[in-house]
Image 1 (spheres, rainbow, N blue to C red):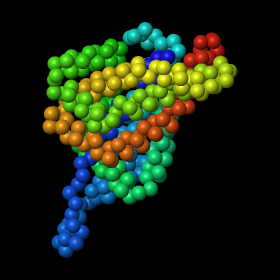
Image 2: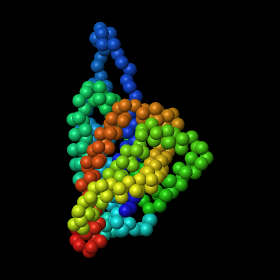
Image 3: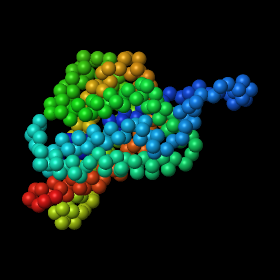
Image 4: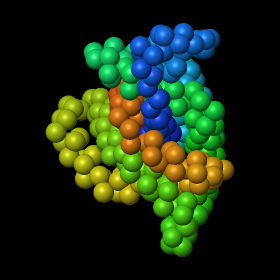
Length: 303
C-alpha cells in the first residue's frame, strides 16, 4: 500500500495546533468601578466557540482543497506509480471520491460533534483561547504558510528535497531544526499522525476486501496495518519535520520561540484533538471508497 496515500489525510501536520497565550485577567470589581470603554470586539476567550468560528479561524476551506489535491496526487494505493510519475486515470477517480466539498462537509460535521462534547466552560474557554491565536496576525500567517508548504510538497521531488534540507540542517545543529523538533514535541504532532495513518490503512483495506467480496476480518486488517507501523512512523516523522521546516522558514527566531511555548498549552491540545477526530470521521469512508476503487480498477471493473 502506498504510504503517500495514507499520509495525505493526516491533518496534524497541516494544522500544527498552536495555542494562544493566556490573556491578562482583570479584577471584576475594579473594572466595573472604572467603567472603561469596551472594545467593539470582545476578547477571544469571550467570543462564542462554534463550528463556523473554527472553520474560519483554521481555514478549513483551504485545507480541504489541499487535502483533495494530496489524495489525487498520491497515486493508486495498491499500484503506486514510481516516484515523480503521475497517474492521470487514478487522479480522476480520486478526485471524484475525495472532492474538496466532501472533505469540507466531513470536517464541518466532525468539528460540530467535537465542540458539542465540550461540557465544561473551562474546556470551551481553552479552545476559545487557542482560536484567538489563530485569529491574530501571527496565527493567520502561520496557517497560510503551513498550507502553502503542504501544497508545495505535492510537486514531484519537493518532498524528497525538503526532507534532505531538514536532515542537513539537523546534522549541522542548525537552530531552526532544533526549533522545529521542539515544536513537534510540544504540539505532540507525531503520535496523532501515526494513528491517523494506521486508521486510514485499515479503512482502505476494508474497502479492498469489500470490493473483492471477501469477509472483512478486522483483526487481520489491524495486524497488517500494525506490521507497517515502524515504516509509517518514520515516514510521518520525516514528512512533518520537512513540512514544518519549509513552513516556518520565513518566521523569526522570536516568533518560533513563541510558537514552541504556545504549542504545549491545553487549549492547543484540545482543539487539535477535535480536528483529529473530525478528520478521522471525514476520511474513514473516503479511505474505504479509495480501497474499493483501487480493487475494482485492478479487476478492470468501472468505478
